[in-house]
Image (cartoon, rainbow, N blue to C red; front, side, top):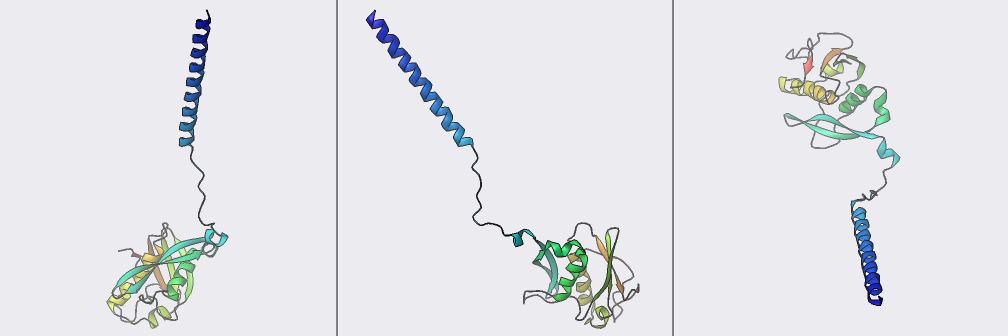
Length: 182
């Protein structure tokens, strides 16, 4: 009888040991599947949260190259088109790139009509332009590529001092049509 009790006790101890071992194994597996919270290496400042990147297209020899700029989102809320075109007028930050908009050019008015942007420039846009078909195309495509980075814009129409159908001084490129991305 004494031997039966010893065997039962040993059996109970073995069963308890097996149950404890299984529960430890299951607990370890659960901990492996828990996703640890990501802790950034650097805190994001409030100023960084308000900035977005815009692409402005400037001349590099005879091609257009995008230049990324960080812009405060608050500056884009009221009139994003004017802000972006004014950045284009100011010129590139990189010394390897060249301005595409003639010096002294100002924006008189910008309005969105459907998927196109109507840009009314001051007369300096044509008077101060160096001319030549390649340079004129670069100027137009610089504007088109820059503003069509905004998904709601597909092309532009250019006016000079509120007048339609103007042209560059040499008459090669006329502003009597809409210009779209090539």
